[in-house]
Picture 1 (cartoon, rainbow, N blue to C red):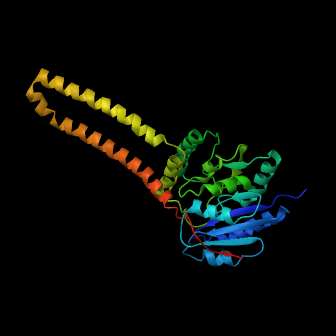
Picture 2 (cartoon, rainbow, N blue to C red):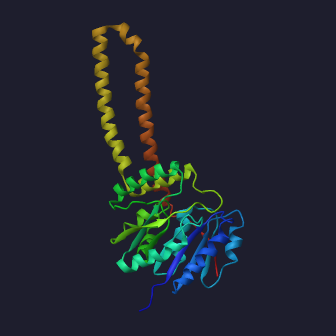
Picture 3 (tube, one colour):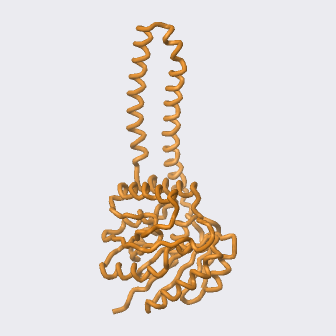
Length: 309
């Protein structure tokens, strides 16, 4: 029986310090599996020597995808999906926090259990508490949105079957969250514990702003909860405003004009609250409208400058 080919997709952005060690650890792991494989490295508009370094490794087993500019990690992974040819696709980060030595376990789990998606849980996670706490919140939110009870949605080290990847490529969404999107097209899903290491070198490319943007993509791409929340909040605030207006009118009649004058600042505070709530609602609706605008333009979410070899 022919064993399935494995594709390992790694997005790369300014990782020149890490890449030599990545190849030093990854290649022996893939060779040791004794099966057909390819490593697809996607240069996401790096401004250091990353492209030069990965180009030096291009060959039969290592393919390079050069994007025309920096589009972000998930767009880079999609470019790797499009270029890959394996039946089992592994995604992982280039910073070596995802140990390449865990890849055989993912493949074995997928083939033994005939799973379509294999997620991972980072054991003894090495990130700071400022990264772990928001991660727990997002994990809980993702479980509720997708209805899939996985523990760790933030780990890039994951395995997908080819047909799941093909369905994801058909989506062509500009902003999405790949682990959650995959659950839309897969029935048999599991996860395993994997090691998590300190970043080998350099700094994380996910700033606080990028993390917030990624989490907002999750909510707006897979849920209409913000819109429904605004609807319910609107009803609540409307009734609250009516009740407060009645209270002010009764108090004005009972206590007289002096009391009304002295409560003018309270009235302004309440006004500011309602105006702020309206602007918040408009902002969320505007984000959804903006996403619709981007989608109807049908611009590609990324452009591939060239591939090697």
